[in-house]
Image (cartoon, rainbow, N blue to C red; front, side):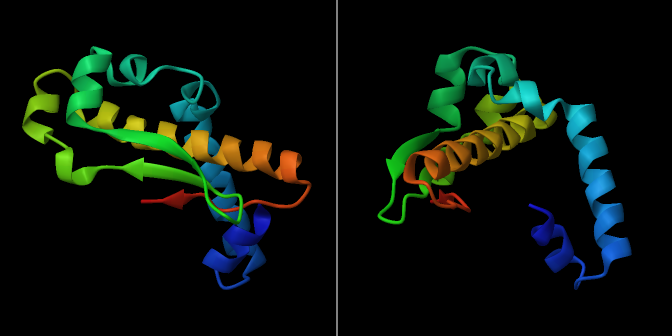
Length: 123
């Protein structure tokens, strides 16, 4: 939504446009479109067991307003163990992946409920 870029730049159209262009360039470079379709193990570059045990995050369902509820259990994140199997860059991509999945869920839920659902709820 363009409004978020305008809000982020105090409704300066030029600054919001520049921010949007940087965002689009970053999304192309990272490949966010394909990221949501990949498994967490593919994104992390290690086994699903290692990822799930050391960096638990999941989609729980939807709240009463219809927003996707996404959990990121930071208390159970074992950074040292993860870094034996992957890199910080890949771990960051895992967060980007979950955020992209949340955005997709918002779009799908909006279509289901026939009203705008945004943003997702992260716990």
